[in-house]
Structures are given as structure tokens and as C-alpha cells.
Length: 228
Image (tube, rainbow, N blue to C red; front, top):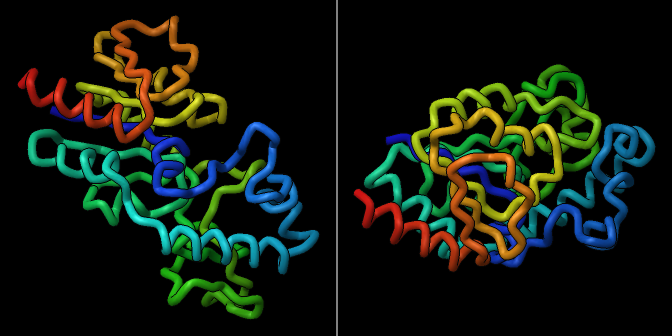
């Protein structure tokens, strides 16, 4: 049975990572449009590079939480596909083996010329002057505002194949990721885990778990394993 899970910032927040866009529109004190757009990179690449170097250090210092671990453990009983909006690698470090990163992953770099040319980062930093094999500057492997989301079609196909769908810690406010739930078949059960349930009234077979990620995934595990 295929269990497709879409995760957002809420699951990483419980590992101590700040959400990408807080209520004040800032990320770690920076306006997101000053550090997360192609225009910001053209305007001040040094600032953008250092911003992500610091975020990478935070990610590497963080640990997967119980929600990440429980999702990984579900692979014993289900064909689990994780689709994440998050740029950290906490799902992988918790043991999940099939993870689709919609917005890239901060532990890799990419060519400034070709987004599909990516490399693992040795250590915590990308330095100005670090070049890809084409001679272009390396930048974080992160999808910025205004850029295409290369994995969205892969994610949509997975959602169409879901026997069970789970949404964790996302407000369904950022597109195109927010539209993935539309690809899930109407007859499929859709579990929504969040302290503030987003507007999903138009969908059928929705089960709301109005809790944070750790508590909510623990409850989900009990429901799924007892139903087998």
C-alpha cells in the first residue's frame, strides 16, 4: 500500500529549524526576497551565499525528531514516499529511503548555469570562487522564488498513485506545492496534521489531526497500524 506524505516547515520546526516564512515575512531576520530570489543572487551573491552557509550549519547541527523517525519506521509496513517542501535532510537522516525534495536540499550545491548539475558539499560552506565543471560559480541547491520547481511533476505522479495521503506541517499557501493535494484521488483518505488545519473543506475523505508534527504523527501511526 502506497503512503504518500507531503511535509512542510512544521515538521522541521520541531527540530529547532526556523520556518521559511514567519508571520512577519522574515527568515532569520532577513526579508526572503533579499536572500531567496535569482535577483537577490545577481544583486549580492556574497550575502546570499553566506546566508545559506549559515542555514546549512544550522541544519547539520539539528537532529531528526520523533515525527521524522516514525515516518521512516512506517516503511516496515507501507510503501512510503516522502515529498518535502523543506530544504533540510532530516528525513534522510531519520532513515526514510524515498524522499522527493521539491525545493532542493541545502547539503548540495548546483551550477549557476545548469540547475540540474549538482554536487554534494564537503563541509558546511560554498565559497565564492567554488566552480562547477563548466566553470560557473556554485550556489545552493535551493529553488528560489521565481524559479521553476523541477520535481513537481514527479511529486504529482506520486500523489496520483497514493492509497493513503498525509499532509504534515504545511499551510498549503505556497504554490505549486500546495496544488499537489489536487492530484490525490478523491476516494483516498487524506490525513491533515497541523495545529492550524488549512482550508481543505472542498476535499473528500479528510481526517484532521489538529496537533503538532510529533504528536500528530504518533497518532497517525496508531491509526494506520491498528487498521492493518
